Amino acid sequence: MPDLTANVAIYSAQILVVIGVAAIAGSVVRLPARAELLYWRGVVALCLALPLVPAIPFVASGLDVVSIVSTTAPARVAAHTGRLVSAATLVPWLVLAGALARMAWLAIGLVVIGRLRSESAAATLGTDVEVLRDTLAPTAALLWHPTVTQPITFGIRRPVVLLPRRLLDLSPAAQRAVVCHELLHVARRDWAWLLAEEAVRALFWFHPALWWAIGQIQLRREERVDELVVQLTDARREYMSALVTLAETPPPWRTALAFIHRGQLAARLARLVRRVPISIARLSVTYVALVAIAGITSLSTVSAMPLRRDATAAGGQRIYSAAEGVLLPKVIKEIRPNYTQRAMERKIAGTVLLDCVVTRTGAPSRVKVLRPLDADLDRAAVRALEQWRFSPGTKGGKPVAVRVKVEMTFTLK
Image 1 (cartoon, rainbow, N blue to C red):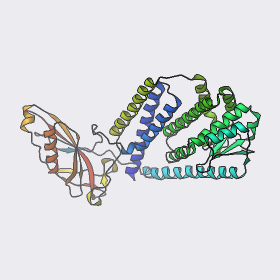
Image 2: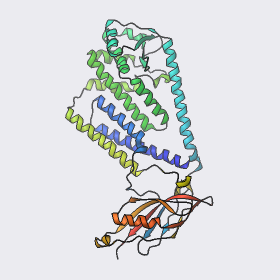
Image 3: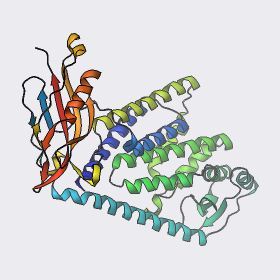
Image 4: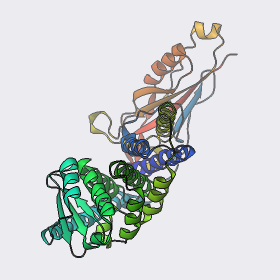
């Protein structure tokens, strides 16, 4: 459980760094809504995939290090960093409880909008709207509902657009534009995207940065649909006026499921007014640069703050770290690495950082190089460490497998 708690904290920090850098990079240049939508979807997908991103072992982390010098320096094991507070074991359960509560809240919202559908009546808005529906989303049902204050679109196999009676107070051009917006959501299958986004929000209910990033996705989706509405209807002013008229705050249970949010209205109107053109070449270069920044940031972040992996050693032994209140292993047999002739001739000196698991028998296993020095000296260091023997680490007086890092320093006299 402490490993899981630590990984939750590390993963949360990784997400925060990636989204922070992505936000700064994305604010430098204004892209079309479609490009920004793809960008933020990619950023969120990258955050979800961070546990799969391989770490580059260039950072030495932790204090559980055994250091030797290849001449006469003694080996030593550093003191452990201390125990995790017992309350940390509750963190995974709190995360799970919050996710379940959020899922339950969404389930209630789905039940409510299903009830709204059963209380609705078929809507008729004229020939132009019917032609638009047959063109964009012929399977969508247009329904009136007496209590909704703004359009609500939902459903995958049987999509439904619930319309407020207030829509009849608008001009025919505005009515057509509003219905076009909802039909575009159906045609683009945005309801499925929204459900997936809300599921991610539920799992990461505790992470405000990821919530914000998903909010950016939803905003850019609305802005993209706004652009398409103007292209199809040529009713920019009427559509903007309709957005303002219908932008009333829905009840809390409907907020996560409605496609129009009052907090997004100002940004959407600003984009509709601004319409900054951008060349394909500039768009391509900018997009590639943003993707490269996000990728490099992710790789660097995972390498700097790696998750705790390999929680189980051979034979089903659990692997402990210094932070878990264990008494670290002590060296009882030390084999010094061979200083190769080639390395001496080239006057190569420095330190090789190794990682290994000291099993309950005191034998090192899973030896790997974290910070290389020279190919020959790296291999010599690995071969030497594989022959070391330790008094095993203990927890509660019982031998346990412990992960340690070993520094082997090669010096020339």
